Length: 283
Image 1 (cartoon, rainbow, N blue to C red):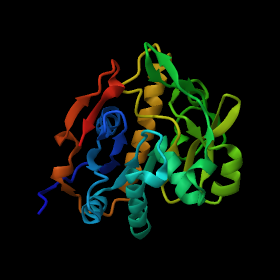
Image 2 (tube, rainbow, N blue to C red):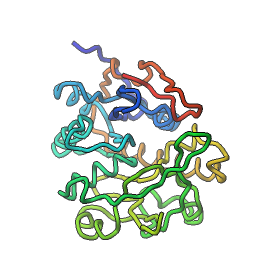
Image 3 (cartoon, helix red, strand yellow):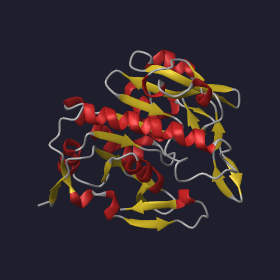
Image 4 (cartoon, rainbow, N blue to C red):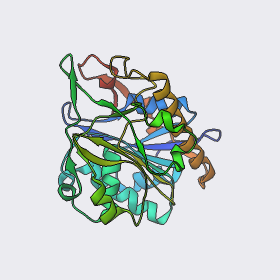
């Protein structure tokens, strides 16, 4: 029997843990958890190795779900993706707001396009190296629709290099038009290596997707990588509050939280690099 507690005053966000192929551990990003809690959410984790019964119990207790970024892996052998598919099965029965970040966007668009992983993604090399460590790029957004989670953010903030990207795959606009426009509104695109790709999407049933990482500026990046740090933090926190308010507005749970899955119960692990992105909660 799982031990339960009541938690009534903050929205409850479930985070799907992903697999670190370097450390061979399931993990929750320290920066992601900090970002959500800083904006007054209560966080629990979803372990891909849990039974469907436990995952269903966690899902039903949450006001919203985050599908975070993670390592690029083939989805046909990926237990995290299979857990994501079960979450989507539960979502169709009981819809809740979902935020997909980076790999989370790729999972979600693969799911709704009906196209296989290798066919929907074009390769975008978007990795820089500083002091021997992989870091991303600060990129700007080309605003297509200034609405949804971007609506309260000044366009000139978004159109400067205030968004942090670190990924190898991206969805070209041609694929969006062919396979995703029926479901998602395109909010923004970004161009890298002469490829224009999807960077922000949303759907009317409260699915919000970013190829960029809104969670990293608040706790992680240095001025060497992020010259407009204050603006980037502002954008990230605006998005967090937007999503969390959606979770509150759409809440139909009893706020019964599984204490055993509280992210803060996990151990912090430092994987050996020198930046804060290497700090993660491990299952």
